[in-house]
Image (cartoon, rainbow, N blue to C red; front, side, top):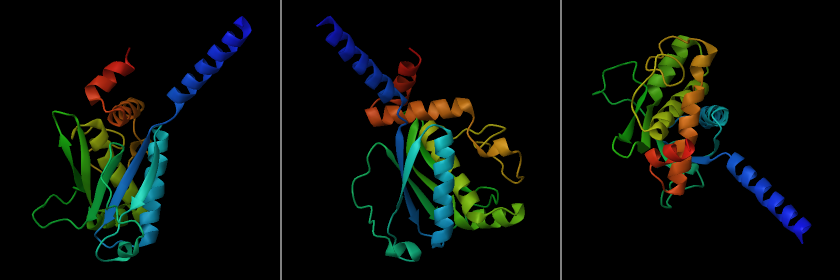
Length: 210
């Protein structure tokens, strides 16, 4: 009996460790209202997946149906209710009222709850910057979308001097400037896990430090 109990406890402990090591999953609902081609969208999706994996987060992509353009043929209408593990990124053309040409997008973040759900990226600004930097447009689009997703998960609109969350992208910078820092990755995983569990970001962070 003692042997059986030890085996059961061992299996329980192993399953617990496995559960803790499973990366949280984020679902990105993309609304391609700018009418970008599907190859550009596919490269953006691949880039987002790579950057989130580097931060320890699994992700999946939903190309939501739009009224016009290539995404109007999408089989996914995205008509179901948004859940805690999902964020929305709209791909639009920059409004004339936004005169800062370096601004590639923006996010809506609730400063009290320290989280957000909706972000917007400007396709025409990304196109121009990609040409200036001689960078693949889909790759830069994915980086810009991941930057905004970072704001939604980190729960702040603040920028840092280096890394993917820096505020100015007019120069290509170093390779490390296109990734989340280790600290940001930890914060993003903690915040996403808290959203999925229904806890506030502050409570999730407190749990992670126990």
